[in-house]
Length: 202
Ligand SMILES: Cc1cc2nc3c(=O)[nH]c(=O)nc-3n(C[C@H](O)[C@H](O)[C@H](O)COP(=O)(O)O)c2cc1C
Image (cartoon, rainbow, N blue to C red):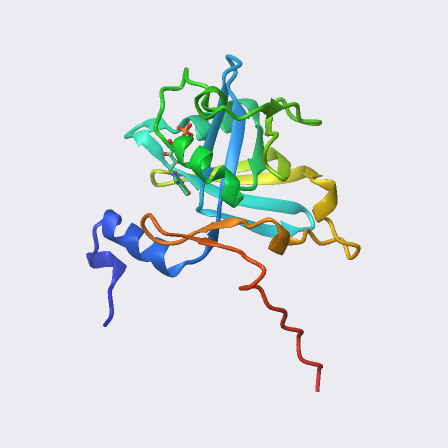
């Protein structure tokens, strides 16, 4: 079977994109509006794209034609955001934070999560999340209806017990959530993690 995108409605392209490009990490993004209202929402069109300089990319859509989602607007207007890791115990809060609340609503209050101060940015961190990544807007490229947000990583907050002696975060200890197609998710567990060393050069 071949499915050419030129013949497909965007909603059907979305179904294929999000069920074949898997698993996707979830950027649980906290921002603060210029008016001082905290905001929190998950985004899985997300990737780390460079280490030098340290860059991430997140793709954010609109609430309705011409009205950017709060996260996009806040990043555009303040230039700052924090990416929080979603672990199994935070699944319900992550899901609640994806509800399209009005801009005046603070999702920290809706979810009962604790906003913790960041070091470089005004946007708060999710205290309950074991990893928070402080970012500054590098560039926003609007392509079609999407805001492609490039962020520069400024600072990692990492729970002390999960950083190993080699400098990696031990993801098997954390039970991190990944996004699949539709309403499906996956879980990184110790049992399903394996090591594969690169072959020697011949
Ligand atoms: C796991 C998950 C991943 C999501 N990924 C995206 C995404 O990559 N881009 C996007 O525009 N919306 C995505 N959404 C929907 C947003 O979270 C939702 O529209 C949210 O209300 C946006 O909030 P905001 O207006 O406060 O920014 C996702 C939702 C969930 C549950």
